[in-house]
Image (cartoon, rainbow, N blue to C red):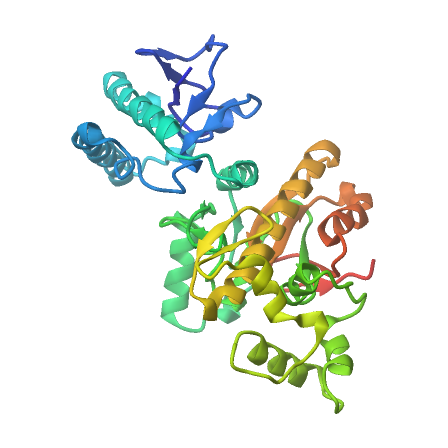
Length: 392
């Protein structure tokens, strides 16, 4: 049965089904809706918005419904704007307590029709299960309030621009809202109105504090380099990858940083012949994963790309999906075993855990989940800038 949820907060339970709104005894046979809602997290439901790859409701609706959905979306934006002007924090309220129920029924009915249209006419993505699990995780992160403070980093706010920016962030941007479909490779971006965790100046990360005792950060050593080894079927060196490369890829001895620069200059320049090694066989990877028009990644993505960029897309996309899949695994592990720790945020190839000291015995197990065959660094600190590597 097709339905729509009325709010995406776990405590705001309400659904629309067949012309009726339900708030208490929900129907039992709910099967298909537009997007995931935390209030129905334990049910087996198909989320059709994932079929559309982030496309807006209006753009994937049939022609006869476009005017109606456009009108509903316009009216919804007007309601939300009025709440913003009135300084109503929507994180503290259920939307159905503020918006007329007649309008919600009309909006949900047209969403139901569009949901049915997409379900019947769009192909289910090959990576649907992966997308669904990541979507549920970033939904959880979206509703976790950040602990922001400049109390111990005022020395960084040496100009009025930084001072005004941080004051605005602390006052109005306390949540991270990721966009699952912000890039073609699958790397997360953040939506408008989100705390800018992916673009914030590194020094200003000091304003981000854990709500528990520490931030524990998991970060791969040479993530995309190790992805290339894995895709080529090569073993993973159990040491710093750039130091290993410095000894094995060049005839003369190189310093680690010089090797790193030369390696990446070669890796993403198809015309460069600086490195010849079966461990890093670019042609073999493209023969296997690129058909001349699309790359198809191990995580089920199919991305149209010209050949010059194909290797870059393959490695970036595969690495990103590996990190996201590991984040889902770690989140599940924490839900089953931790007493207070949880994933705070994800920044490119790094997973950051808001860590409670009572869970100290779990760090090694979490690192093992994250690493797999790779090698990772674990750092910890009292804020997201001052981090110290842990020896585990």
